[in-house]
Picture 1 (cartoon, one colour):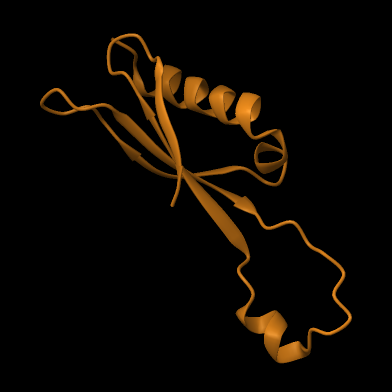
Picture 2: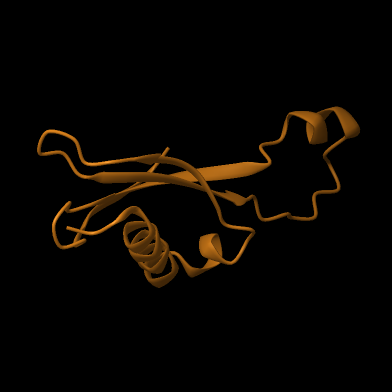
Length: 88
């Protein structure tokens, strides 16, 4: 069975492989769930939202724009195989 550090590293490498843009924008581990009672490793990562130049947006729109997006990675508890990556 993987320990938590190995599982986090595996989850980060899976995100970087499948979503390289997401992984390169200030990737942060937000939550970690250990595999209890036959469950899987579950990690929530966040990444800064890519900024786009928008001349129509005002200061108020900038205040309510999302700053980070999240993805949840699930790994098999024994071997660390990828089960899923979902938007959170």
